[in-house]
Image 1: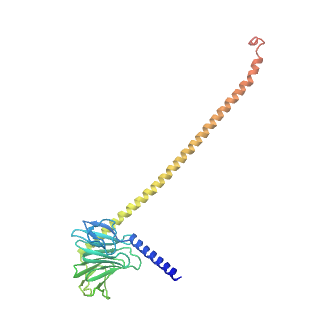
Image 2 (image 1 turned 180 degrees about the horizontal axis):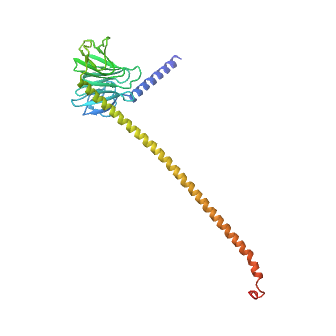
Image 3 (image 1 turned 120 degrees about the vertical axis):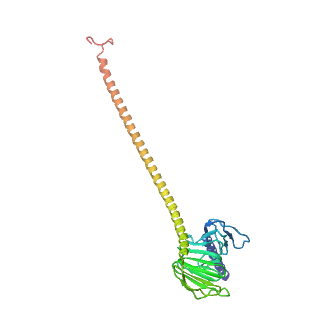
Length: 294
């Protein structure tokens, strides 16, 4: 009995693990936009390859960009949670499911969270600090020694990193429109207001994301409209065929009625002719000629 019970437990555990793996593979982070020729190194590989649209990004995968490159990664099944890796940057997707974690080795990464699962968290970790939120937009940048965290939508939290690599417990909230910097092994520094240039850069990317989403929705609506139009066209065609068939049947019935009436008239005329023939014979003479005086 113990062996059987253990076997059942093992089967359930394997099934649960398989389900989790399949679920992550189905909703794994995905490359949704590429500018230039950014590179990706899959976990366990030893060479960089080009990032391609719709490419899945697994846990431990690294992405590297040159000066004029950028790549956007979508998270969760709706892909409305984005991380944009800027030029001259390197990031590692440490964990592509809740709690989400992206490690920014150097360079910059913009995060826009529009549809995270309830109670989920998303963090961007740099060599000197960690920033995170549950539904907002912010930018993280680092050179490995100093990191900057800028809040554009709602509020983010920022923590420093200890010399042993652990994250400090104390956190600093940065409200929308402000930023802070974190030096190596120190707590977040002074809170400062974002510049107009920084806001314009963010708004430019945000507008680009919205425009792409609007175009995607428009294409989807057009496809549904075509489907509805095709369905209606099919129904109209069936109705037309049905009406034509009904008209044909009615026409055939009318012709049959006309033929029947014509035949009836011919038969009546034949009977009348047959009935008139003996009277004519009686009017003839015995020699077969017509009667005298006719």
